[in-house]
Image 1 (cartoon, one colour):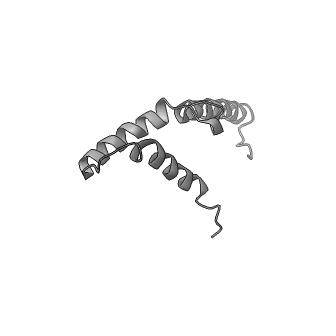
Image 2 (image 1 turned 135 degrees about the vertical axis):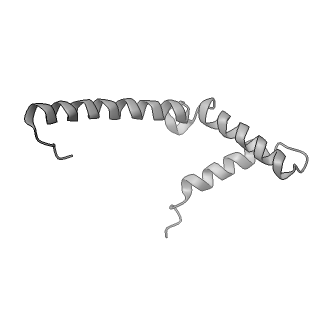
Image 3 (image 1 turned 45 degrees about the horizontal axis):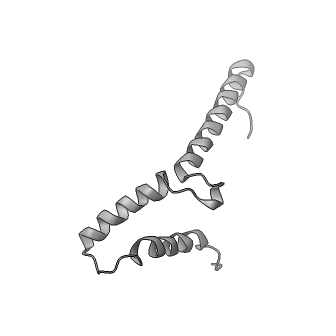
Length: 89
């Protein structure tokens, strides 16, 4: 295992600690922590722009990815229909 293996996970944990837990002045219960974490993850994925994603949200970036895949799927389907062969990717 290299130190870079979990870099994205470590960065995410650091972000959650900085943006969510460290702002809190009190020690929340487990239920409160779960509720706050759920709300934060919704914010993190749907609202908060990310520098590493070109200031888009993860959901926006995922939607772009899906649209690209749909285009590839369409091209693959056309090739299969026209040639009756499955193209090699």
